[in-house]
Image 1 (cartoon, helix red, strand yellow):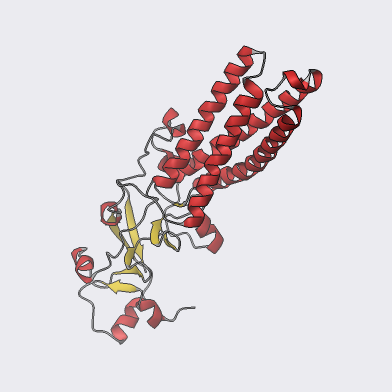
Image 2 (cartoon, helix red, strand yellow):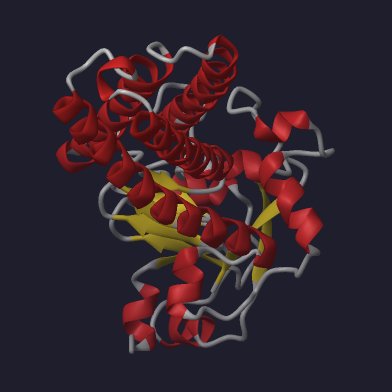
Length: 313
């Protein structure tokens, strides 16, 4: 439990307050205040630039993700579909699988290379705070780790070394935080990975049944032992990723509908923001109005630019 004196070290006070000492402590003990500030004030300067986290663990996990998808692509095409005698079956399933795989990898790239909502680093200077024209008695949070003005619902990420607006969690598989600006792409990534995993599992089952009825040497261009090993590995990969991404997808959708991030749920933080309907929360993440663009990783949603963000004490 931080003492009021320690808490004051992490905040900057507006101009016009009384002297230091007892007057400062009194301000810190005031009832909670909210100070509306335009989103433009806290939008990162790198929002339109390329965003990439130089974290070894995250980079390795991201590369592994792509290699696993490419492995599934190899097995589906060269072990199951191309050797198939049914041309219609191969074309339909090959087209569907490749479209889903492309959307999954595109969503992964957008989730990894999009600024998740980083607060400008080092903007908590005396001159900048004075430019906000705060009223007497108003205070703003200052992150002691990245020296930035910390808006409400923002948390500091030790991997990104930045404060992230509406940070849900840091995901090594996309080598980035999941926050306000890239949550849509992360949700699409988990959804498309779950779909291609399910599709691959179904094709593996049908291929096994087909090969058992026919000669194994005729149902694959590889030897029977190699074919079995490749299919078993794909089956294991598909089942593992289907379970993992389905759970993540469900967790993210629930988090969006309740408008409560993973960190806020974990810390059981008291709700200090306006409660909205589930549909409004979904539109805030995926865009307004509802359209097929919700499912496109190439569409950038409007995350409510007209809304204001609030600093809290």
